[in-house]
Structure formats: C-alpha cells, structure tokens
Image 1 (spheres, rainbow, N blue to C red):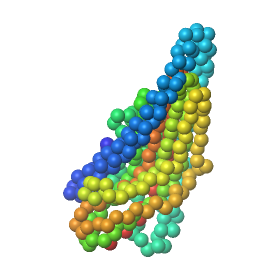
Image 2 (image 1 turned 180 degrees about the horizontal axis):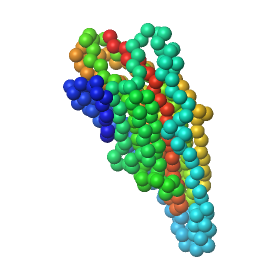
Image 3 (image 1 turned 60 degrees about the vertical axis):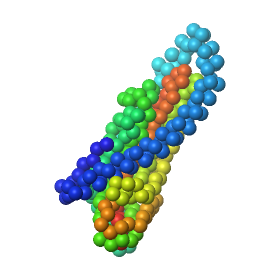
Image 4 (image 1 turned 90 degrees about the horizontal axis):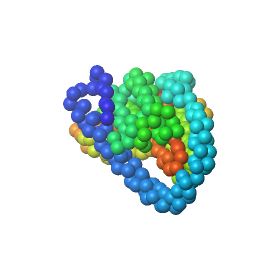
Length: 293
C-alpha cells in the first residue's frame, strides 16, 4: 500500500487517511478471496474431469509435439499505452460544469492525496500511473505464461484519490464523482483445462475514522475464456461513467475520507497448455462532489 500526500494535508489527518486505505484494501481482499475460493472449488472438479484426457495426451508423443508447435506459434499482441495514458484531454471545467450548476461543493485536482494497493498474495500490477495534479489514473494487470511481463500469480490492483472532511455538525454526508474512463483487455486459453479471466471498474468508499461505512463499485468490463479461446476488446474511446452516489450519517468531530478509484483483476489457469490475461484501465476523475451537513 502506498499513500502520497499533498503539502496541504495536516499531520493529524494522515493516520486516519492511511487507516482508511488499509481498511479498504482489507475489505476488497476478503471479497476477492471468497470469489477465488469458489472458483477454486469449480476448478478442482474440472481438473478431476480433465485428468484422464490430459494423461492420454501426455502419453502420445506426436500429440505432445503438435501441441508444443502450436504454443510456439502463439504471439501476444496488445497495445496498452493508449489506455494507460489516453490522448483525449480531461477538461476539468467542461466536465464539471453539470455539477457546478447543482450548487454542490466541488473538489477538483490537485486532490489532497493519492493511493494505490494490490493484493499481497497475488502479483503486483504490471504498471500503475497516478497524476494527482490532473486526477489521472491508469492500471495494467498481467498474469499467465502466455503474457510477457506476467508476475506469475493473479492480480487484484486498485488506485485512486481521496479527500478528508471533519464535519462540524452531525447529518448526512453525500459524495459522488465524475469518472471519464477507457479500458481494454486480452485473454487467451490454449489446451486442456486452461482458462483466463479479466475484470475492471471504478469504486467509491466513505470511511469513518479509518473504518468502512459506505461504498459502491461499477464493473466496466469482464471477460472469461477457456480451452482454445482467445479474445480481446476495448472501450470506444474515453466514456463517462454513470452516477454512483454514496451517503452515510456522520457525526460532528469525526474524520471521514471519500476515496475514488479504479481497479483491475486478472487471473488464469494454464492446465495442460498455457493461458494469460491482461486487464488495463485508464482515465481520470475531473471532480468530486463532497456534501457535508
């Protein structure tokens, strides 16, 4: 976990902010581990079904030779640079015009702090890009032997920005953000028992004194392939995500952080063969609305 603070963030807020990111990471890790445990149970059954066929293939020297030739011919081609660093400008004034007319409190870059983390029992992301002065973010996850630069394990990586508030009166805290995102993926699975999965999206959290209180997530893409399937896809340029408001009753004098981020997930099973996955998301958060009581 890494948190970087702007010069205007007081020392007495930094512990709360770091605690909020740790809690956010722990919650996401728990949810992902549950999903992966369910997938592992399914994969165990699939392995048992595929084991006799895999054994026959390994005993046939001509089949093994043909399969190795097939794997040698596979070429990985995927350009992630334009997604991590989209060329379309993110204009803060134009993008936030719609919320300015609503009379709400608006936060714009540079944001007080940025953050990033990845699940430690998996691999680190292939690349992460954060620009606090522009509110720009990009994450690329790679896994599996089919993909160059893979860390070898699944990847669950998140990154974004946040603001801290300490209300003077109790009431309802309501937050949202503008999210202009682009994304892409590659998944390939060749051979018996192989599969690959990618996901990506955006998220909001409200934390109270470092404890999760409210949040939401929009999954922008998901793709899974298995047994001799290869697929790739991408968004049609930079797209504006739909509203994702979060609210929570707050207490005067307590510290609250509102975090906005992007996330990607990539996983694979090679089986008797090879597989790989790339998930990449990029874009920016031109503004956040943070309405205190």
